[in-house]
Figure (cartoon, rainbow, N blue to C red):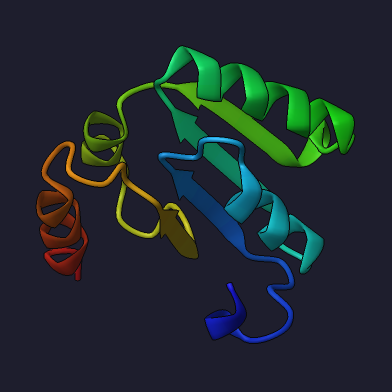
Length: 105
């Protein structure tokens, strides 16, 4: 996140493979207007929901239990200002995700 600089005022953020939600929640703490979290693993999803509740960020978040690869295929171009992704190492074609976003005009 430090590579993004300081504030993210008003941005809409997509946090793929969200896990605990750390990346998207950090974006909110830096001024993002809304974060959508996508996580499919039951344990990660439960922790994510707990963290959103603990930080009382429910009004600024959407939490989606879904496969991140399938989720991004349904998105409209420009739906989010910033996409964060932390795919599991060695599982699934992370390169396919990068190709998907590189093909977006």
